[in-house]
Image (cartoon, rainbow, N blue to C red; front, side):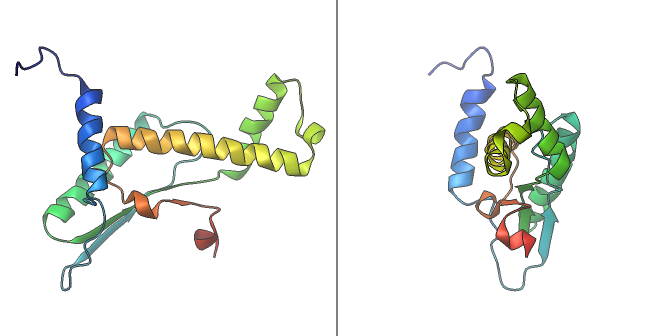
Amino acid sequence: MELAKTYTPYEIESTWYKIWDDSGYFKPTFKVGAENYCICLPPPNVTGTLHMGHGFQHTLQDTLIRYHRMRGFNTLWQAGTDHAGIATQIVVERQLESEGLFRQDLGREEFIKRVWQWNKLSGNIITAQMRRLGASCDWSRERFTLDEDPKR
């Protein structure tokens, strides 16, 4: 097999990331007697997509998590996203304005549905970006700040 002349990151990185994630390498081990190490990801707002600051912050956190994981700690990098309240409302209102509508035209229930649709879309984009960066979060524990557990 001949070695490719150029590196194709998507093909290689997406294959390996899936193997690592599916194998459970990012989950805590819960080894008895091992020290615990946890980082709760400051949840990005679902008002858009990640920016360079997020990439820098996530790289630092990922480095710390991987370092402690390799040292045998029970590690958890808790992933999640934040609803961002009013900022998300404004994003959805601007989307409506581009359609010639106002939130009052939809009524409360329909407007809330649109906000939740946006949350799902934006949240999925954010987590896909993090996975593309190679973030070793425990995705099985991913949370949203308006999920029942965090609200409680």
